[in-house]
Amino acid sequence: MTSEPDDFPTLLAAARAGQGRALAALWRDLHPRLFRYLRSQEPAAAEDLASEAWLSVVRGLDAFEGDQGTLRRWAFTIARRRLIDHRRKQARRRTRAEPPERMERSTVTGADEQVLESLSALGAVDRLRSLLTPEQTEVVVLRVVGGFDVSEVARLVGRRPGAVRALQHRALQRLSRIISPEPVTD
Image 1 (cartoon, one colour):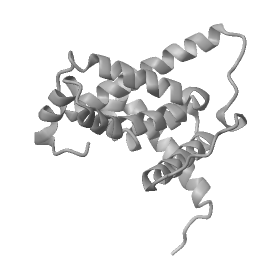
Image 2: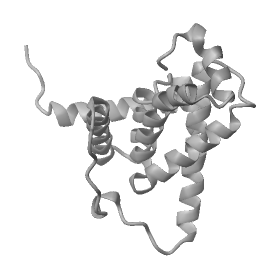
Image 3: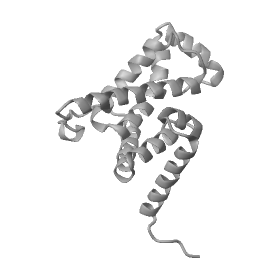
C-alpha cells in the first residue's frame, strides 16, 4: 500500500468510515493485483470476478482485523473463492462467454503511465498462462503479483508448502528453458 505500515490502522479506520481517499488507496493496492491473478486463471471473467471480490472486501472491512499482509491475504482468499464459484457455475452451464479478445473494446482516452504499466503486466500474465500449466501459473502469479510467501500460497490454494515449492520450481525451470534454450558454457 502507499502508506507506511504505521499508518495502516488510520487508513483502515478511514476506509471503514467510507472516506473516498482511504478506499481509493486500498483499491490502488489491491485491485490490480487481484485482477492480474484472476486474469491468469480465468481471462474472460477476470474483470467481473475482480469487481465482485473488491465489493466483498469493502463490505467486510468492518469485520476485518489485521495488518496490511492479512488484508492482502484475505482479499486474495475472497478472489479465489469467487473464482471457484464462477468455475462451478460455468461447469453447470452449456455456453461459454466469449473471450475478451473477441469483444470490441472502446479506446481509453487520457491513459497514464499506470495504465500502460498495467497493460504490460497483463501481457506478461497472459504469456505465463500460455507457457505454464494452470497450477503453475496460479502459484507463480500469487508469489510474484500477490507478493505472498510459500506458506501463504499453500494456504490460499489448499496445498502443502512442498507442493507449492515444487510447482514453482517446475514453472521456473520451464520458463528458463524457453527463455534460454541453449545451455551456457564457460
